Image 1: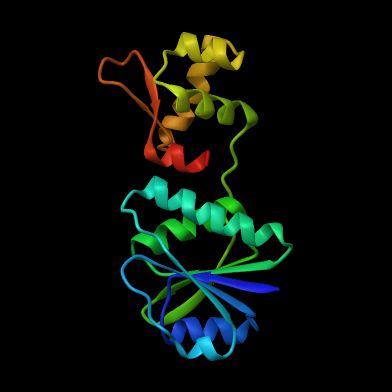
Image 2 (image 1 turned 180 degrees about the horizontal axis):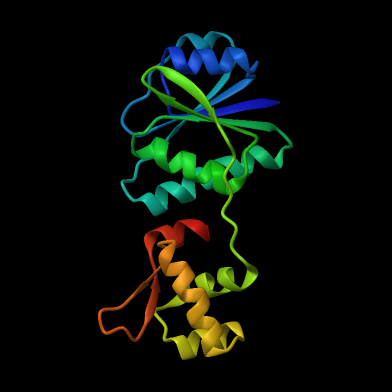
Length: 183
């Protein structure tokens, strides 16, 4: 089944759905839900994202996408630049959906798939920091790498905005972006 997960309303949504022969629409929204012209042509599910936390919204959207993918469906995502659209776009790339559209100025643009390529070691570092703030020595022990390798990986993760450093420069912590990556 071809499923479109979107926060869009109106012409852009209709264009994407018709062009791709979408069979089911999962409409995600934050404030209110509207009926649309598409309601009479396909199955529709409405899901309210009732949080202002990017991390909680990411968790909810990840759950929606994973459940849709588990059934062997072809997944399309169409977003705009508002809060939920930006988070949905990030999660769609992270989860490797089949097609991503971004709408800007009433124009739908199919986007290239992006991926977050983190090594197994970097993912282990992120997951160990999920538990608590830690020093480089403790990270090395938890992950099983030398302190020099910890610093190499931590510097890269900090450049990517996934890890931060405390004001005393002794410990490292997982940023909100890092928390979203490991969901």
